[in-house]
Image (cartoon, rainbow, N blue to C red; front, side, top):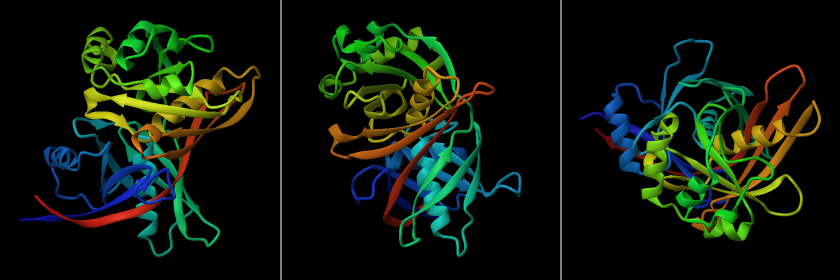
Amino acid sequence: MPSFEFVTVNVFTGTRFAGNPLAVFPDARGLTDAQMQALAAEFNLSETTFVLPPANPQNHARVRIFTPKVELPFAGHPNVGTGFVLASRMEDPPEHLVFEELAGLVRVHVLRGPDKAINGARIAAPRALSIDIAIPAETVAACASLALDDILTTTHSPLVASVGTPFVIAEVASVEALSRASPDIAAFRTAADQFGEISTRFALYLYARRTGDATPLRARMFAPLGGVLEDPATGSAAAALAGLLTSMAPTENADLHYEIEQGVEMGRPSQIIAGALKTAEGPVLATVAGSCVNVMRGTVEV
């Protein structure tokens, strides 16, 4: 019976047993699609990644990302964590890695601490910001078990935004209201039936401003239809939010960074640095960065 090595890391944290756990299979050659999905369901983490040889030898790896129920075209914390794992295993890692994914090429910048040891990664989202359909505030409130006046529409209405994976993004009136949010699975199913473009997950990303300033934020992400009741840290959604807010900056050119807390209500506090660049000439491009900590390693027989 063949066995496959795995490692787990905590992403978007410098503290073990905080942040968002990730399982990584550094060499997934020989695993079928069904086995990858079964292993992701067995680990039952927000995502599990499987590393394969790249189609283009100029790139470093092909990375497949699975939730317990579906494969994703792109996700933030799996790329940050996988970049950290692969770079840590190299004798002389390059400054950048390039991953092939369903959403496109993901560029990973290896981060090091003061002691020069690898301690995290910053990734560039594979696609520019795209903004899709608006979602009624009533739908968002129902999915999050909040009152309608808890959902703010002054900066933007709830809408679908993506830099590789789509999310419904909505602003909540306060951190206190955000802390009260709780996913209503029946409401999620109703919303998914109504909005077929994102019916596979209807992933809902809520955020609130921590202070009067625009950049310190608190966020939560619910995707129960994708097997993730709540996610401790969602890099792809944070990147989409950074792109969305930067796109609305009053100047033609803006390079903004957002300090996003997530996972606090779950007891897994995470710190995400999301950035976006807007220029008059081109699309809005986003990045997301964070620290990682090794946790476990082992083998699985299939």
